[in-house]
Length: 118
Image (tube, rainbow, N blue to C red; front, top):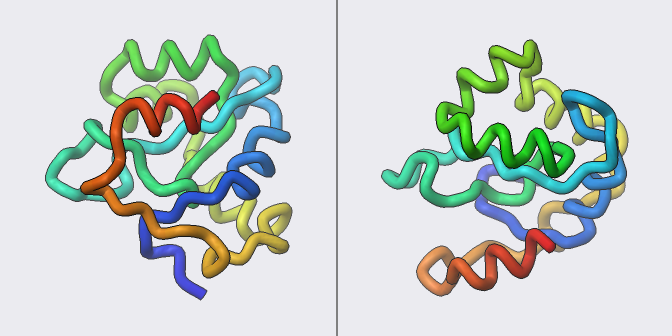
């Protein structure tokens, strides 16, 4: 099974959201890391769902307002990629990336992205 594609899975995002915020442990939403997929638009498009981590609303907004995502995570003392690997080994075991849909990045609109984050 491969995690190299940009995948979309509501089931996987729900598993991520069930965890508390990585910073403060409050109820979380899924934040898609912006620095893991270099498609020439670094930081402009969210990554696939396989690169989502749980953040509460406050920390999610703070991260986006801060701007430099890698620096923000370092400032918080958290390695989000390490959390993702741990999550895939444990809670994400029942998730099959081949059952997900591969995103057609040409067809994605800002409206679809915002709707999916609700």
